[in-house]
Image (cartoon, rainbow, N blue to C red; front, side, top):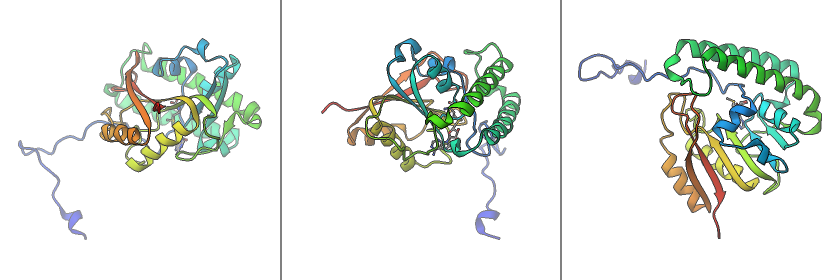
Length: 252
Ligand SMILES: C[S@@+](CC[C@H](N)C(=O)[O-])C[C@H]1O[C@@H](n2cnc3c(N)ncnc32)[C@H](O)[C@@H]1O
């Protein structure tokens, strides 16, 4: 047995083993998605103002955002590594991940804020409706390159293709799975494919705490010619998720 395995658990000054900080327990990155209305809240978007702009949703999951945006004649494309799967496979994944998320919401209600929804049940029903819209759109529009299978930190698009690039609930949330260098490379790649602006939400992890390396990330982005701004948003569902990071190429 290794010395590490024999090391005693850390104790607080009271002699009691401190309780671990509560956090969502998810075995992997969840294939979980939200509606255009919810995106509009946490990205502070006016959907009407997006018409005529090219929008990319990265780490899009069951992207009802993209389905609804296209229905409103916004030119939207979604990217996710799961888009190499069939609709039957994605339906099964949605069922498994939504059940897991619902169980987590019931088990850890203190991690959530009822600002965007009247209850956790209402939030779950809304997200399930969003997944249904995505699955039906995926079945009919996958073939038209609306849903592109790819993964950060490499996106299959030319420089400056999109006016607005959105990325929700991947960066910072899963910081235990993706290291700092991955985050830096992912931010640079998101900026590479936009002609204007990137928005990333939220800026906290599965325990609701702010991403600890945000200041370093912003400094190194600045050194790479990318300006960043942390902007508060009028939204909070996961406790602590009330801001977004806005990235732009810095003026020369
Ligand atoms: C929690 S979902 C977020 C979906 C959507 N953006 C939202 O906020 O509702 C995270 C998504 O990130 C995708 N993902 C995992 N690794 C990725 C990577 N390296 N690059 C892009 N997307 C990734 C997962 O497949 C999953 O669909």
